[in-house]
Image (cartoon, rainbow, N blue to C red):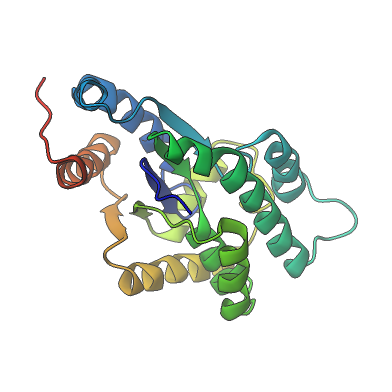
Length: 230
């Protein structure tokens, strides 16, 4: 397989941790900070791609509705949920992520493989070895270059989501489930410290953004051997 030229940056965390908000803020910072102009001038990053799991493709958007939409009279079984996430990921990787990386794009992705380990593994209690095998099949070995784990207490995150009003199927799960998910992310961060960077998501939004921007600036300098100037 041809080595990818772009970079895959993933945002992870419990419900209400601010992933989507920070992803959009990072998109604007990438432009304002001068990094986009600098990388383009050097022949890197022809485009910046924002995407998510589940739902980053047309097929994935249909799977997302099955996974996160209103519950039906027939409850979704845990293994069925796991396999639907794997199907969404396989389509996403082959249809969007790998083609984008091959052309040198920087991809900002809201959730990826670590969410499956945290939610279906630690949250649902499914076999971790099975989940790792499915992730390998779905991704064909594609890992993130950097995962930003927005660490927030599960109870605080759930309170934020419920203030918004409507909650999706995953957000409707009880606090104990989300606490297990939070523990799963913590274990993953300890296991893969080179790939996963903890961000203190309990801080005000602009401070969280500052933490992320510092990490990204350092990584861009290491990856591309240059510094941005406004």
